[in-house]
Length: 301
Image (cartoon, rainbow, N blue to C red; front, side, top):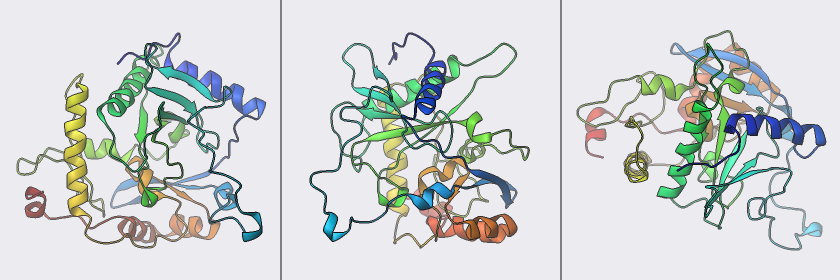
């Protein structure tokens, strides 16, 4: 898929983000950042007080909603809409996140309504891959390497989904790093450097205390190839999920972006504890997912 943009994706997002922020069309909340190592892996722990101020739960009985919850992706605000892609017969829209905590956070949503809890389809994966590729190709200043996007999909309640209209989200890796001096990198990069198991076909990092699966992508994969790999990973994850997720306290939707090596925390006391004690971080990571299956179990998936 070609996005068909008149400027590079990174330039478009950056320019429109600044304009929307300065005009008050989006609300940017800063975070306090610490890098904590556990099992030799650097994780970002972000404390964002604004998360604790977000409304939660059902409205009060005397203030019952007068209609359905607005869909921000059905008819996106022109102040947040970046583009409709591809240019001919668009199937998706690119929209700025209205409440970002990391600069240049943007969203890929289906143009027609699709359920967030359904599986991604070929068109979703093709569009997401096109965004990742366009970001890398269009943001290479002389003497610097390509930049990266971290893409994630909040499919259900456990991963922090808040909108029923299907959408994927993108965070620029460089914006996440924020000049980090602890050699932080997305956790998925460390996983992707691991060898593919001859018995299972998956990659995983043994030090990570929760089940996870990865498979390498071939160069320039087709939408069919992307979808086949996605379904393989999905089946492995579903087969591993044998019980409910444990309570992870005040960590906000951690499963959604955990493979970025980032946790969002909304309680200052918890942020202090995670910075002070790496064992506490390890325990949180173990609690929010499922145990690592052994090699024999994985081979049967």
